[in-house]
Image (cartoon, rainbow, N blue to C red):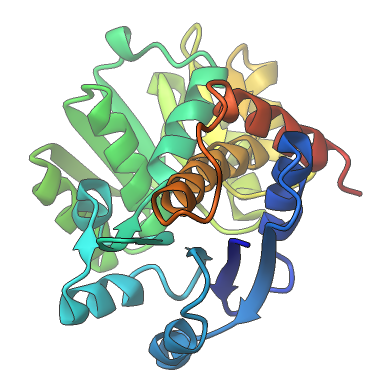
Length: 289
């Protein structure tokens, strides 16, 4: 039966096994399995070779860039979004070859939608942070037609990842220091700062534009201080767990399609697969202590 796993270091904290297991139960897919495997950059190629029987993998840090380097060396196909952002968080084995995808972009888009992001009135979007998730946030906003992206980072000289991602997408990016971020002029904001680092900027949130949408991509059970301040100021905030579910649903759909193509799962897949999987994963997130 099909099996998948999450790879990374550290990986013990990952909620992906619980999310995918919940989806299997909701669909009645007995026999599917999903595990955690500890792996750093130096071990990635060896783990993928050793685990050749698995239909696919979720990839967390520090592997998102390394898997694209490996793909280039092996001749694997990189989905457009993964190539543009320089980050792959999903590896899928189809019968005709390996695909590297970035489902974080879909997860960010879905979470901002839940926060009521008004793409038609947003002249620009703000992204806090400069790593792989920031590049995915830029891609999500660019995909919605936002022409100007503003990246706020601790050290602008180290913002090469977001600059390269913006250049690859053909969109304009401005790079500023984090201290220069002004919430009062931001209609769409994605914080990709790690852990609770974004909470240091909650005090700066006193007013926001009407209907402004914020996503704090860092997972935390319950609202972050930044999200709480944003909502007190009249905006709407999405949580990191909503992004986590959104990207996991897309991963699940890719794994399922690959299993069907390989003859490892009966067809057809249910027409409402994404809806049922999203509901099961959301219930699992809410049940976390």
